[in-house]
Figure 1 (cartoon, one colour):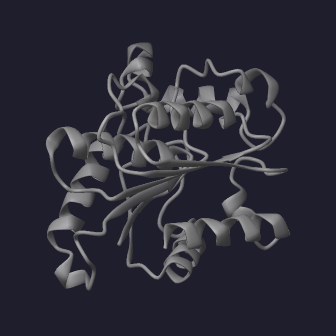
Figure 2: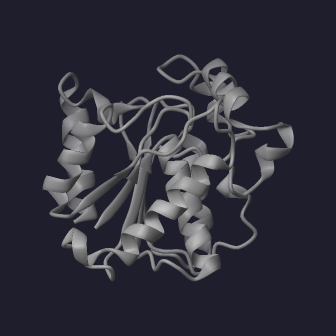
Length: 228
């Protein structure tokens, strides 16, 4: 089963905005998908989304039987802010020793909220701009001190040992591209089985462009197959 956290910069997005994504992953991977409607900023600032997503994931694991799912085959996933949350929940589950997560699917994840990766300076024109990120983080974070908190920026985690295998998807023309690659490298160095794919020609949010951009449809289908 897959527990999925939607994108939206921790400020926007909901179950309806990503319904098509959930269905495509469910059908393509042959899994039960549980979508988490976590609290959003600015009404609920960091770490409210983390707390909600961890609680939901633990509940899903403990109630897998009534969901007709296998608790021993639990994956977490998300795109953008949701990818951030999937990475963070994987870390929390390892540290707290529950639930047992078998796989993490991180789709153009935000892993370094300090925005220090080179692509924040080179990929500034499409969909998610540096100004957009500053706006989202201004609502989500309580202060600048949160930027280096591993529960907000999982790239700052002290140890990557023992984390679940990962599939990390980046987009060539995405502001977040280099931090996704850096996260894949840190996992690989720690001995975590990690597959990193940079989708050529794609921009941030391409999962939502399936009906418009043929390559986005192809890439999303590949993600579902890999998850399966």
